Image (cartoon, rainbow, N blue to C red; front, side, top):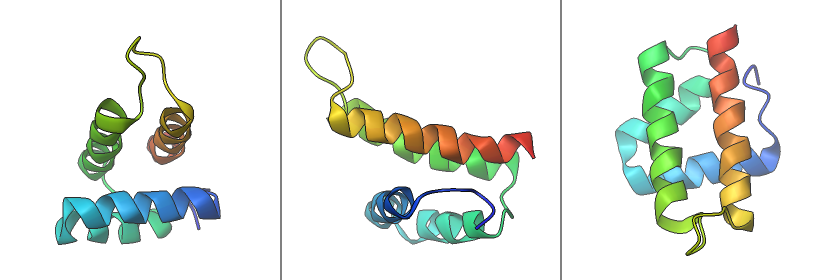
Length: 83
């Protein structure tokens, strides 16, 4: 897997993309092969960021444990831009 996601991160990404719809799920699949464009990475990052804003922060705007998982996932997906 060229994106270097852990198994847990991959499962989380697939779950988020399933909720976001079929087109997003195909982006997650392309991530495995490192075949995403910068715009497609943006789309995946938007899915993750939206989930973070809805469920990943506390009332004081600090990330909860799920939010920290999402931040790590976002970092891992963004690593694709560096290659």
